Length: 464
Image 1 (spheres, helix red, strand yellow):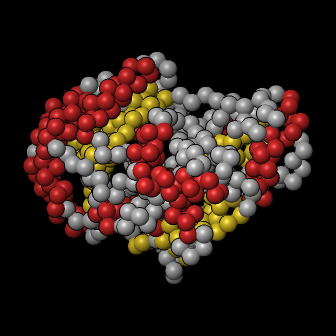
Image 2: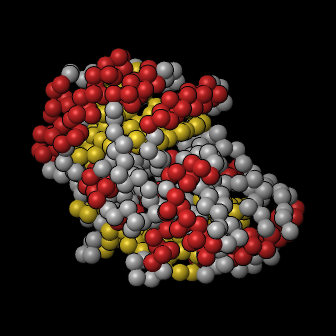
Image 3: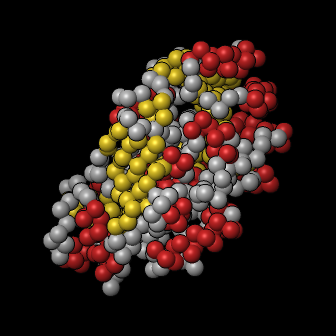
């Protein structure tokens, strides 16, 4: 029997006597607070929000979901672009109370529960001069980022987040608690590394750590938007021979109104290179010097800084509550045609909050056997992510149209797409993200662990 909002949900939830966490219903004082997710354009009203305190609560909530037949959303950090971490009239398994982190500085590993945010993990690991590759915004949920692959500022040196994942604890649709790693439930471990939340609720992750920081050479370098053609062509040629320690992104946007940016440059259209060098600071200065020298930038904030400062640098660009609409794709290389499209779409930006980063891939990512994880796109050169953003509904339709036109312009050059950047775009886009062979293998795995497709609020892979 399926329940919607209201009294029926409350009656059923009342039978969950073994649930130790907080159950939040429509009408409760905290309901509107806890139903909100990062993307302000998503406005959904779940029937109940189950704030889980441990594995037992997850199992209890899943048993309830199986009984009632309502939709199930799983939320770690709530950063899903299309809002998959919430639902209308169903149950939200809110894992945000699960904040446990344990760092082993001798083995250089960390265990983190599913409610941990990227910045929270970084703070703990940096106490020992260690880090694992994990994203570009500190308030992103570690769980969702990892399950989709995990691109970030350390990826060209140390790989994706999933390339540093050692094991997971996962609760299946039937409530079974499993450990998955290279030796136990290896096929499930393969699928979890890139297959998203299709196979269960991961409650804890174990990561490999690497010596990083505490000081790195990083920051942004910006030129006026009208210089985009020459900046992009120089950038394309420059990054061909840079070491793996360097990870960059080139971004078209209006400069934000931040204290670190001179007021006369606020809202100025610009082409920006974001730099992260994870090796010695003096080596980073040497590697980045040609970029700074080819044309005088109007803004240079690239310098030695704490690793934690690098990780939080883009937080003001993606705050909670703004309205976001995205489209994304990978390309193999920045050809002249791709650069021309990027320049034209950058010059068409007319919102102070819209932007599109083009992430530099390659390095360690491309040296991992593509069959060892479910992640697609290890051979791709760059990942585009067009982000239309506004403070609220005013002007949102125009930004959404800019995103769609930008994505359409790149269609002839698309090589695939990063699954964490997808919105609700249909099964063909999901299949293209993985490729036919990997997709079929994921479907077989889905059939084994979730034949009823209980976990379908994701980039869904239906059972075979």
